[in-house]
Image 1 (tube, rainbow, N blue to C red):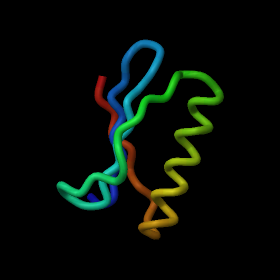
Image 2 (cartoon, one colour):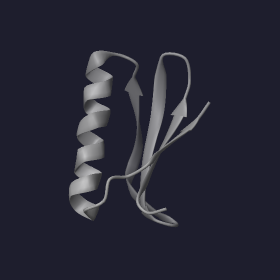
Image 3 (cartoon, rainbow, N blue to C red):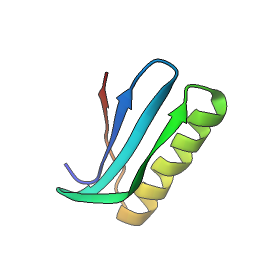
Image 4 (cartoon, one colour):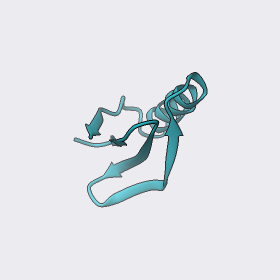
Length: 63
């Protein structure tokens, strides 16, 4: 499953990390708040990963 974006979900904010391939992280992890602005940031990040890989990345959630 490549690429993939992981979200570690907690109350109020989530940590985001993308992987282009197994063991190959894309950039550094970052946090987003559970607000409209945070979700807009996440959507922009997803579209960036998609443009780099030409694939829509699945999103895996961990609580």
